[in-house]
Image (tube, rainbow, N blue to C red; front, side, top):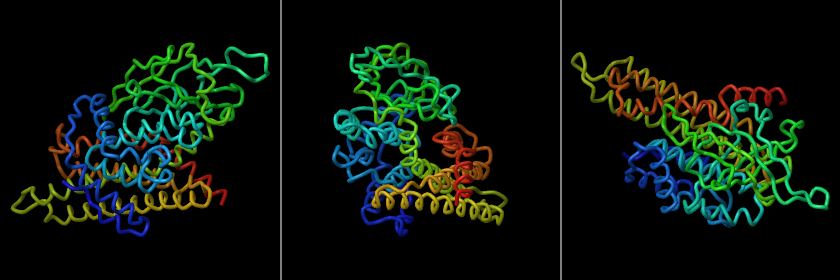
Length: 396
């Protein structure tokens, strides 16, 4: 079925966004990917999304992108529509953007030329490697280190870095062609001692073989760096500027996580309405019961509330870019928190309306129930978003 597009008439969007949404709504239902093997399917989705030009929205125009700069509203539309049809397709799209976002923001011309056009074509699969076993929400606690190797006579000039440590919960781990890795270059400096690096998957000393199985299958792995030597040219952005770069990257894509949650919630509402209209019981349909109508009304309101916060955050970020970059951390946090929490509630209600059928493997609401859960955790758990919002409120 075609995903809804009525919301594109809202004033947050312009004609280019509306055209994008309509094209994608026509394209997505026609795609058929066997998702029984999540790693193979993710590669297939990347190839499809690249071949049909959708990945061009993950990079700016000067590197093969569709638009002059990364556009949050376009990312939200893409993720919402893809997630309505296939959360794994949404994942494949999102990781191309998140995994290469730091290169877009801070990469050297040579780095951008080497990676971004390939990301836009789907020729290279990207990954973002920040989390560690003991450093998830607390990035400053990371233990992965990058030490200088081969110092030359000129002070502060060196040929390479050596990476040692472990990253985990890394999306696209094991299938990515490159990783944007964040490591300590000043161990005592906390978040102010983190630097970003681009590490190609084939680099000696990098082991991505430890895959992680989760309730909604998608490619995840633990990365182990053992005397992994990378050239100094792999440094991404400023020395010790990695934490700021990671947060800037997450700011861009946090509203798009809300978009993905919104797409799943819209699909759950669609499934609930369709089931209620055809399910016969006690001489009438499930939809004829007032309790069902009340529940569907609550679900619709939760979806629209999340939508408005999501579109506002994306619009504010895009408008801020026109004025030289205005951070919308609080608004993005509100959108991410509300959309993911509301989607969890909507999907749970949709499953309940399905009764026993809702827990049957292969029924859409059953897979949505598993798919939505991780969105309340990754790219900043709900509790982290609450802290971000609360601190912003206190600061006025």
